[in-house]
Length: 192
Image (cartoon, rainbow, N blue to C red; front, side, top):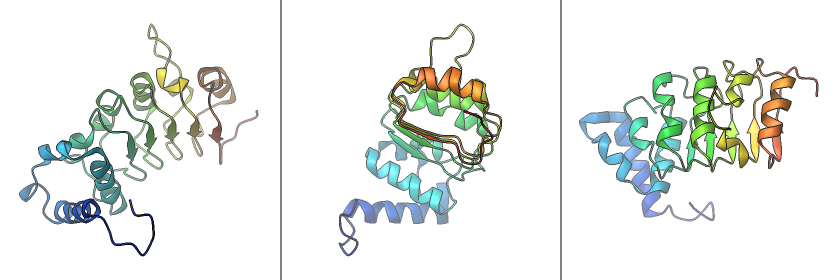
């Protein structure tokens, strides 16, 4: 990443920019998707961010970007990704630190619970506008251990998640996330 706005882009930034252009224009005709997982972590995360910004991230590219090395996943507004693919994030990216799925209407309790179950290093979870989220997203499934991802969570944002209740928030999130520093509740009808 550049330190000064007038600084020349790095070679990695230029390569990521060009790869994003080729992916958007030609897709699998010019790029072997299987090779994407071999990119350095920072380059892969930057590529995903560019594709999301251009609304060009799709179900063909994302599976190859979900790796054990993935630390940050910014999917804000990627409402066209299939739910079955999003269900693989938790198991595919156990070292995930940040997940941003704001505005992804297809994100549901199962996806969130799976991420919280498998991503024990999770620090930031942004779910604003994910209207299918309810209290059970933050409660472990029956006969399952506590959600490891809650333990290290520092930031949770659930704005516009109208199905999350005060009871669920206090009973699951506040008890399960001892290091929570920031809780975003914009447009929520909660009485705390």
